[in-house]
Image (cartoon, rainbow, N blue to C red; front, top):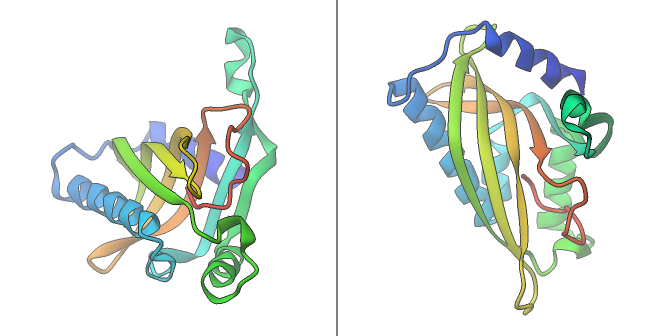
Length: 186
């Protein structure tokens, strides 16, 4: 998933968008609305916020000693590595077929997005966004729930009054996930 990794490097040279500015507030509002759409399982609405050239990935994590932390993200193996077409296929399967058994009945989720940092991108109207994500996920009538946490590296592209999600890399905090499947969108 070199596309997102290459996108992250220029972020160090880009301009930070100030907290409380109109652009920052619009980005945060986009992320909050996205979380709401996913929690409410409005997947077709969410699909309208995705760019046609979307890359959506969640590489594996590996526990490494302190001196090797830069190598703890393994991009050659991934939980997800989707593009726009495969995401649309997953949404169609979940909403229009009876074959999505991993999410039927659907999970009850709550996405908490925080620590949003926004920088200008390399292209006009693009923004590099880093945010923390915590998801609670409950299934069936079980009294326990899953916790999934991580950091997201997004590229948002200005589209009218809002944005389109062009890139997302989710760096999960866990090396071994405690959830039986990862059939939800992060």
